[in-house]
Image (cartoon, rainbow, N blue to C red; front, side, top):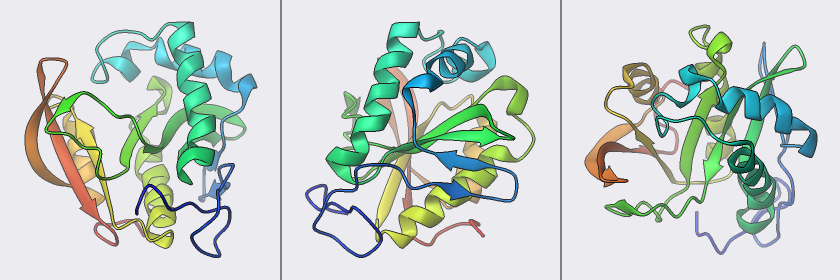
Length: 193
């Protein structure tokens, strides 16, 4: 999808989608971020099970706050963005399409980047697959032709999940002077149903 094209509903291009649509699965609700999510997200990003392969260090409350604001604002700027993942009304994760503009080699600014993280207590229960399927199904319906993601080589669970969802390793890049797998997915690929 051309970053210059915007949506505000499912009717077509040309206008700005200002908020995240709510996506539901059999067990999960994916909804837009809210300011009141800060405490739950700060606790999640302080969990070693969450950050072990995503930067390797806990996020400060300030970093989580800025991430939360970015998640809210990307919908207006790009017509896509991130969702909070809820199970039974509790925040268990964060997932979405990003315009991170990372200083990564090679650059990945030519496609929305999919990122996901689940609280440690929510891992290993199929929630990530379920949430990814919902987001990728939504992205496919928005005519987003290609997405990418970056995954640490040690994060074998996320690599397997990404591959199941249709992501294919493009190359091993460098991010913060460390190797990182850069994966691409064409719309409609993988087991999202």
